[in-house]
Every structure is written in structure tokens, then in C-alpha cells.
Amino acid sequence: MIPVALAGASGRMGRLLVEHCLVADDVKLVGALETAGSPELGSDAGALVGRPCGVRIVSDVGAAVSAARVVIDFSTATATAGVVRAASERGVACVVGTTGLAEDARAALEEASRRVPLLAAPNMSLGVQVLGHLLREALKLLGEGYDVEILEAHHRDKRDAPSGTALRLVELAAAARGLDPEGDVRHGRSGPSARRTRREIGLHALRGGDIVGDHTVLLAGDGERLELVHRATSRSVFAAGALRAARWLVGKPPGRYTMADVVGVPG
Image (tube, rainbow, N blue to C red; front, top):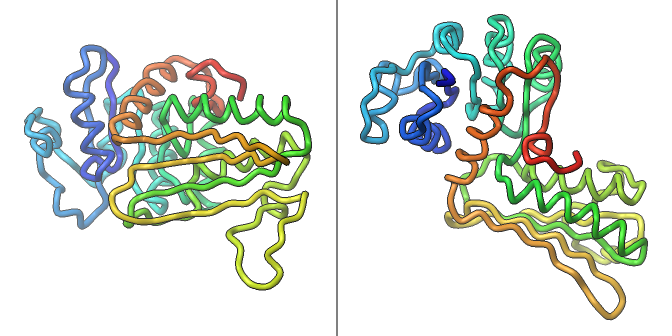
């Protein structure tokens, strides 16, 4: 049994992970963390999903991860740095699914990875990893004559845009084309000078309703187009992927890992 702690335990993803942990036969939930002021502090984490388990939700990071071998973080962009610092100081592996991280949090991830194995991914879905692999292969086979446009859609409450997954797809496309993943990206189009250039990747974000997560890569050539599409219809795929990552990560040497490593496709 792998002892697991969850950061952001009462959130949307946190509750799904609680449920997945409690029904799994090879992991054990030993810690649950929320930020100070959360109305769920002191609650039984399992009770949030109708399965009381005796693990109380706390705001002390050290206490939450003290008995764990791996922590899965789906907290907030401002909380992640503290989670990985406390975990790495105690030799606890880290799986980070929180997106929209600022520079200080990204630096904390790098620092932690020198002490423990750490995997940070904007999307824990196994299908998205395959999407990235297919994009890389398609661009290699198609050559330069196909324009790349990336469209992502999420629910109305998603805080960051574009999604971390879309930005990762931009990175893959830019690397394949020899483009700058920041300077050669065009976020939407409007106005009289909206004509597309060859040296750009289009990136578009939609928000509405309860869309879990859709990502479409359009490769448009002359006379034909190819679309690579991934649609998540349930957040459970992200929870299942995060747990798979946690299982895989435990016992690995310190360093940065990716979901591509877990799935076994080129990174």
C-alpha cells in the first residue's frame, strides 16, 4: 500500500482523488490538506464523498504529508510552492497538477526535484499524452505546408487561460517547427490586420458551461486539413491519471518527470 497525501483535498479534483484513493487496493490516503480558512478544515476527508475514513483535513502542510510517500497537489497556484517545499524536505515524492503557476512556484518545483522525484503536468489524462505524441509525428510527416491552430474549451469557472495543456501543445508544435513558443504564438484574431503568417501558431481559448476539457489541433494545408481532438467527458480521467503517476513515481530517483514518462511515449 502506497501512503498518499492530497493537497487541495476539498476541491473538485481533490474530492475525486479522495474517492479514487479510498476504492483502490494499492494506495492508502494518509493526509489531506486545505488552505487556512477553508470551511472543510477538521472534516473527515472521506466524508466529503460519503466514505468516512478517519483522515482529517488540515492546513499544516508538514502534518498532512508526514506519513506519505507521495503527495498529489491540486491546490491553488499560490499554495503549490509551499506544498512541494514541505514535501521535498521530508523526502516525499510530488505529483503536481495545479496550473497557472507563477515564477516562484516553478522555481520551487525545480528546487524540490533536486531532492525528490517530481512530476508536474498540466493534464494528467493519458489520452492527452498520446495527443501530444500524435501532433509531433503529424508535423514531422506533413512538413512545413500546414498551418497550426490550437483551440481549447473549458468550463466557465476555470481560472487560467489558455489552459496548461494548450500551452504544452504549443511547445510541442513550436519545437517541431523551429518556432518560439511565446513570440510566435497569436492569441485569437481581430481587426484589419488579422491575416495569418506562416511563422505563427494560433491559440484560442473558449470558456462556458460545464465543459470538462476539449483540445483540438487543426493542421490546415492547401486542399485538406487534419484535426487531432481530445475531449475529456469526466474529471475522473485526471484523477485516475494522477494516481497512475503517483504509483509510477514512488521509488524513482530525484528529478523532473512527465506524464509522457509514465505513459511511455517520447517526451
